[in-house]
Length: 268
Image (cartoon, rainbow, N blue to C red; front, side, top):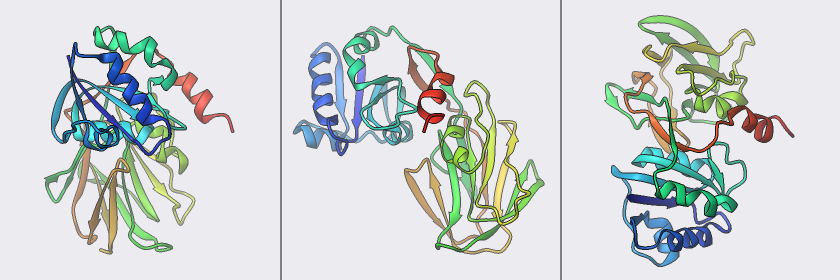
């Protein structure tokens, strides 16, 4: 089995956990370390950009997991060494119990929809959580128009617009009043950030719809993809989103989406 390990070494205890994982895997499998964690461990590292693995161990928080899906291809096991860890499948304390099952291929793959975006026809990196278009300057609102399959669906003045997947519905989209959508449902969710008028409500579109977002008056904005990549915009570009042909593949041992909501999101 070809295994990739990516991690956020800035989270306390993560480097030690990765060292433990390396020892547990041993020499029976081909293991590649992404450069940042490899440098911390003083091991040989490599770039994961466009790499392919049988399994990817993403050690850290949700940001580490999102980044793993952006840079490489493979079945991803999220190992939480951070705080929230909503996307992670196991905690750091559970590595010894579940790592042997990963190495034996004894796991279930859960596929989740990703969003494919284009900027003036140029393909952007796919998003597992959301694409966020927001103002480039603090305290400046913009006038946005949301379209679906060539028709105008809504116009709103706001700080920004979030185009999210069901996976992302429990993240930034939820924080601005968007619905929680079961990840077994494929859909595109559009929410506004701090809309000027209270009438605007989040919109949910079929996954194969072509959802466009444009500024009615071009002004500088910033497009942020899964919180990982930033794309400065002049404001006159054409942005369009639809379901990606490449689903995200999660390594799963449990079916506990609603328990996670109760444990991680519902309690203060």
